[in-house]
Image 1 (cartoon, rainbow, N blue to C red):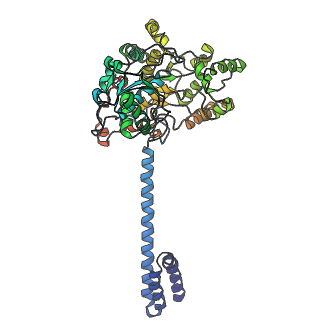
Image 2 (image 1 turned 60 degrees about the vertical axis):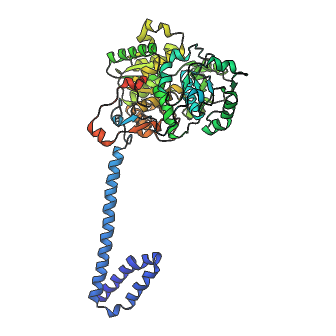
Image 3 (image 1 turned 45 degrees about the vertical axis):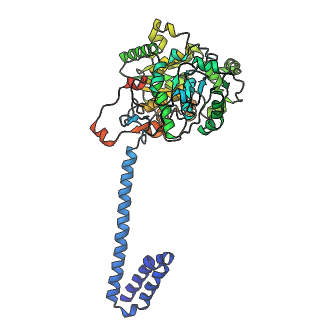
Length: 526
């Protein structure tokens, strides 16, 4: 009996001590082997005690590891439960993490100050292109390029010849004096080139068009030598999306603070916001973007038969460089905007009741009232700037960019903003709202929603609603959706959004006013 117990203990020691050590430290195994060769010289009681003591240590060690793993698992579980966006939002109107984030675009003490005009490397003339928000991105990057080149920037010229046919100048849309003064620490900006400079020019400004997404190194290697020779260079361009953090912060200072709309635009837009809040404490703004040009550009099909294909196909011919697309392929890739009816279905499935007040930012809707009616049936409290402003809107009607600026402010001030495409206004507004503390911004997961809309009549509403909420995870404007390097910087300005220190949040310090963040009236960001 005792001999059998001895053999059993020896086997346990072999399994727990000798075999593992052979694979890790053979030298130690020599001593262990010698111990077993000499085991007859050691009393069985001592041997049993030693073995039991060893097994106790092993048991204690493994038990401690298990406890540590359980503790770590609990901690990770608590951390995951607190992570932003880990679970379905509790409140459709506001992220529970909004109060702990804020815009932070202050210039570093080491960031080079603006170069005076008389010692700068020359003058940059910028001719922007596209609609209001495409031109806005060009203006933002123009300021950054002027800083890179140590150049003086002339207030940019806006596009008067694009599809939108708007004759507005920079000063008609943006507060030009504020633009110059606010950014004066970063870049020297002037309204026009001095006459003596123009008279001294032997040749007209050198016009060039740098490639899209050019790096700072490209401008230093290719543009700066020309600027130094000619003193005056004119172009339209886009900088690369990936810049160092200080230049990204400069982008934010221009975009969210320097570009402030003119007073007439601000006044009428704020009046519309007041009228929306007078009718309801909260409202949803939708950038519907279902105009004929947008649908033609997308290459998608929306169920209008041969008439739709013919009409949109004719509009599409305006863009000679567009590639041939298939409607099915674009829809499967999630590139097609939702119809007004689909937008309404998504909102109802997410939990917005039919008494929710909607502000719809849009131009001419393709299909007119017939296309809009299903959305109005789902949400009878449906408003546009034309409905709210009445005759006050009359002076703005001939200018599409000024109308877009009004929509921009009303959408920014909304409690919830819904994007319906991946255009410039949607991206810049989404980024602006993230900068203001991740205010609720919902982007449809069009790729996965399209299959749900097709199968809507084959499932109960509760099932459809649950599936919509599931596919919309990660598209609800929560802070964890923004990661460095993800997407377009104007939509995900990760370098310019900071988290408040824990002690400040516990102290319950007040948030900055919404109006200041909107219109750039605050000095923050410098």
